[in-house]
Length: 613
Image 1 (tube, rainbow, N blue to C red):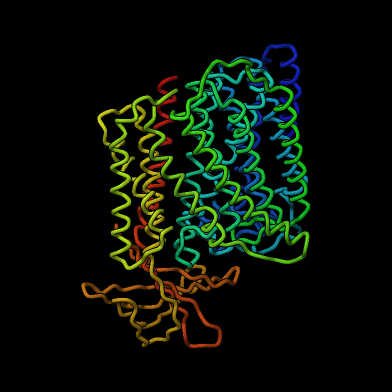
Image 2 (cartoon, rainbow, N blue to C red; image 1 turned 180 degrees about the vertical axis):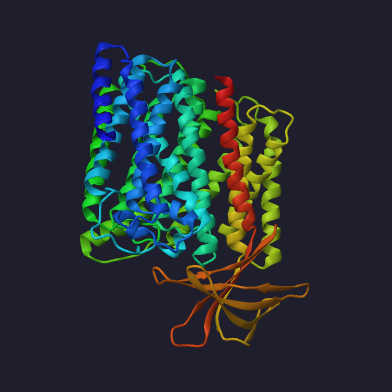
């Protein structure tokens, strides 16, 4: 019924577009479409809650011993259920767009509806013909196969829905942009309207990435918050593109320049979201995050993606009309040029991540040889340019629109730069390190931090959300840089009773105990770590799950404002020894706090947007 509703809405919307009048049935059908998807999604949730194993999706991803919270989250913790959630968010966003855009031109609204229905029909077809979440099993199995235990986690349970809101929001940006290009409606009014959806997508994508990063840190057992996993990358790429788009829209609102670049970024954000969907669900990527391994599903999404890209390119080249003889001058020393330069940097970072993610795939197809692209690749290509990016980001927001005429008042910025350089050199000298790249990177990070702190606490409260966002980003970069430079780690094989010295601490493996839980057996290690001031007790776990039978490692982390102490253990097959990893990770908590500040800044911008309206 949902697909039929979509086809009807698409047909009626096309008719309305040519008649230049909005058919009132569109609103009723859009609500009906949303209602049908809500009923479908609720039905799947109920199937998971009551453990209805006659449903193939429930059978493959649940079992009777699974806690009720993970039964519910298991609804979207699989390929079929997650696509149904995609459809739910798609139809909800479209309905909200119809309500929120009543003051916009009728032709623009109807055409946005047409393009969005193309996407919705494509996803309805994908769900019905390749990924039906309501396939029936007969005879009914008495027990399910269960969900991967490492996915049974509170952070990961709410991570996908939040991330999907960010992904699906880009589809509305895509549809509205194509409609505005066709209608020649790329204007300040359009920018104000589309900024709402850009901010919603950016905020939820930020929170979704943060939750996934927190989960990876404490659940996967390697003690990192970012591993450059391909599936991590496909969520980061749309975020980078959205960040560039937000700044471009601000410039376009102010001066109505960078029109074509704004359109390209609007199309690219959704294209990257769809590329991520293709890579995750085609079975091409090998990752703990991936859902599917059916090539037919990948072919469907890839074909659909090419269709949308082809459609957007035709519209862009045939309908995009640049104003001729535009008298607006653009000066190098201006805020808009600084935004453009930072956009170039962001596109470079995006290109590096894209190449690092897809190159191994193409290499395997062409030469049947496998390679993995890890942190060294990204660090070597991103870090040198990141230094210049941070410096430009420190200076650019302090320029005026159109043209900066008073350079003399920037002496304070120059002073802060020299202070940052001196402080960075002093810190490295104290810790006995002398890498020029690290000194410059830390200097640029400190410089951005000091500048954003100065702006945040200035008397002028204008655009306070922007100041919080820039401060949050500077704190994020500084925390990551300090974390990378100052982290310490030891990996060693120990048995009960063993002791070992590390830095100024002594690690003791005291005992082991076994505890029976509801759906797993827990083997808890007892460790003591002593330094000159304090003794810490650590209790990392090994969990042996019943259904499916999988062993997972649960780290024990002692969190403080200045550093995390992280300890995890793993079994060594056939040995009484355990592989123990102990890490000291400075400023970890500030990475999460800074990301949260970015989200808060986004919500403040949304509040301001509604308040202005």
